[in-house]
Length: 139
Image (tube, rainbow, N blue to C red; front, side):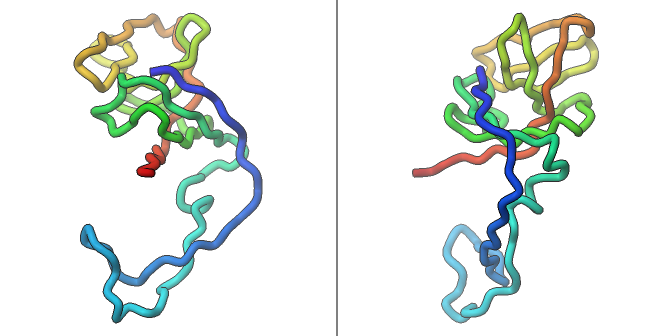
């Protein structure tokens, strides 16, 4: 799965209403005509604003991780990647999104059985951040 880097984040903030009830695969009760609080997606999704960027996923290799072609990924360069993290990495000069596996052997693991793992040496692997969130547009 290739990635297309879009942009760094800006400091703009928008407060979005947050309903006071959870939504059980439906719409909040009409009786809940009040909002509990507001939610700022920057505060929810971004731990390190100056080290965070967006990237668009392309391809089918990460479908079992819930990342589909066209999804917008929120990537944090300040988070230390560990075994099992979904990362943005460069392989032979091309960016890719894969699951980082550090044992038993270092590799970038696709999350689709139709694709093979990419085995790498530690000195060949360049990681450009950990994927913190994936935004999937339904429409």
